[in-house]
Length: 183
Figure (cartoon, rainbow, N blue to C red):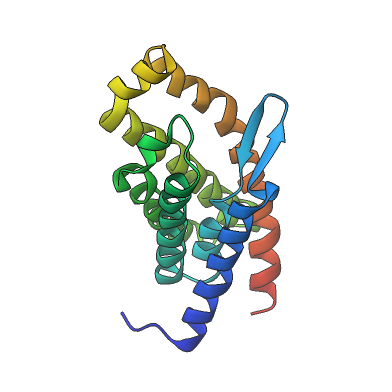
């Protein structure tokens, strides 16, 4: 793998976008009683417009940002994100899943070629993070939240994931179509 100056620039742009989203309210959009994350979208879009290596690095930056953010500004559930299997690995896998699905659908129309990989990347983020949280920290989640871990995490999947899927689907199509048109 040899990264070009152009690749490094793309990593910088998408990485900076991820950090800006993480430091502003745009990263967690309130919709009714839930907060929908947009932090995974730069990793998804990077996979669609810049390729696997750029998106892997953007996903890694996203994961490391999540880890550091939970150390600097902890919440009651931050202990889950101190584990890189929860905070970093699923974010890197967003890039892998999104790019591999995109590769299979490259010859389809824009909605399918960009939208389906975006859905898969979004699902990877939610299921990956919450699945690893369950595997690694179920007992601690139950102790802190006073509810079975599968109910708590399942509730997050049921409330957040539909909004995150729709948001990533729409934004990925619009952004990837626009960027790839001007390549």
